[in-house]
Image 1 (tube, one colour):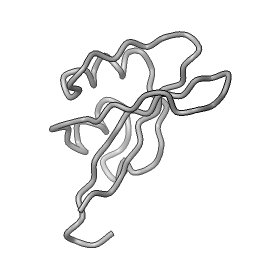
Image 2 (cartoon, helix red, strand yellow):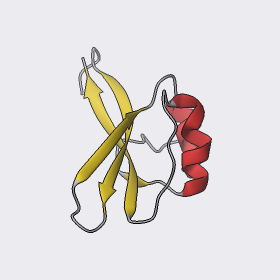
Image 3 (cartoon, helix red, strand yellow):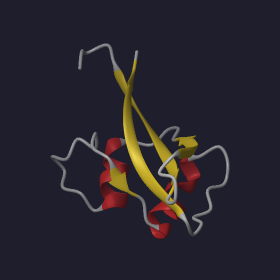
Length: 85
């Protein structure tokens, strides 16, 4: 990744039956440090891998989302990292 790229994180929601992406929520204003805290990761973790999101983690991420996220049965939730220029 070049120095002029920045990272953005989303919560991607998949239908468990079809494994298709059904929703995506972009996180705004969250720091890598806060993500490490929420996901219980060490300080050297860059948070660029995919992380499964629990209901408790979804609640902790809610302040960084523009719309409510409700964890529902039959759905899988993942924190994803993307580069943006």
